[in-house]
Image 1 (cartoon, rainbow, N blue to C red):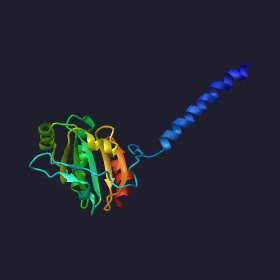
Image 2: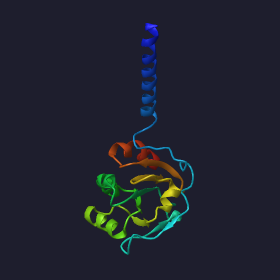
Image 3: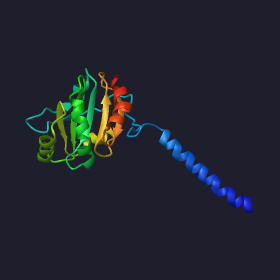
Image 4: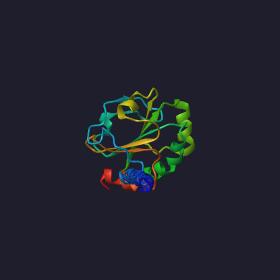
Length: 174
């Protein structure tokens, strides 16, 4: 009986440790399985943030690999990832489109005026309907769409150098 009392907690602890390890080994931080991976980007068309930018649609994602970043001015992780996006904007061959997620246009513009605009195009998804089609659960989220318009990667949360190197760069074919 004493052996059984000792064995049960050990077995339970070993099981929990195995589950924890499996969670850690399931992929790089920030990578999230998405039903869109390997499929065409959802059909959408969004208006520009304002007269200083251009809106875009699914057709604009073809012809070049594109990072599509859902962000908002009210989002602290969006502010944290912004220097990374600005650095990526300076790299040759990386096209980034931003989708403003459930935000006021004037607040989004103030955010970009303060921190800089890394995006080639900035569109408004004010009610979040396009985000739903993409499976976005919150901001920031980033998708890699290849030159044929196929979603190749999805990252939840702020981009970091590590996540870029482990998830985004390979999906861009770099």
